Amino acid sequence: MTKNEVLSLPIMEHFYTIQGEGFHSGRAAYFIRIAGCDVGCVWCDVKESWDAGAHQNKSVEELTQIVVDAKADFCVITGGEPCMYDLTTLTHSLKEKNIELAIETSGCYELNGTIDWYCFSPKKFKQPVDQAYHLANELKVVISHTSDFDWAMGHAEKVNNSCQLYLQTEWSKRERFLPMMIDFVKEHPKWKISLQTHKIMNIP
Image (cartoon, rainbow, N blue to C red):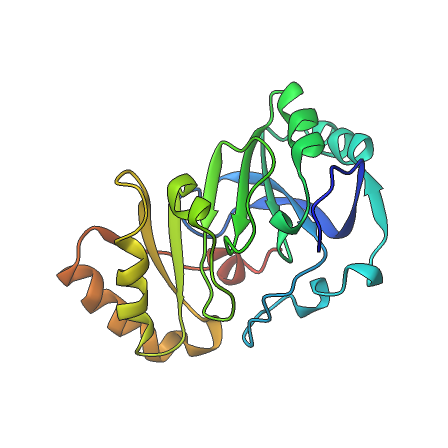
């Protein structure tokens, strides 16, 4: 998809919840899930977000007002793959309302927009762009195979020195991989474990 500055975006869902993963886990956050993705992760738990045409557009103005009305001070832009779109207008509008912004991205497309926290979750199905390694505040690698530990280490060598490193087991394989992740983090203490606590709490 060609990036163009947009005044509206296809939105699969939006909701106010508690961030369940990574660095900001436990924090109240308004999620905006933008539809459209061509990465194709086989274990994706929001495959219904892939087809942008299946979801209605919402204007930047409407999205901003929704977040403001929720009295949220932190907003997570996710997908799908949100960086498929030029997010300049959306992020500028939210920042004007003093909303702190995070993005969750595979890093396969360059970011167009202003973000406070860049969560980079690379996938084997599509190569990340160089920008992702420079911008990453957080590297979050999903573990679904034993080879993913070495793969995670390879990405960690490329990110900036201040980037926080997280491993997160693919949910359906957590009983198998969580013990391995615990051992790995004990051997490599720069890494931390991210748990999908929103699933434990049974919230969106």
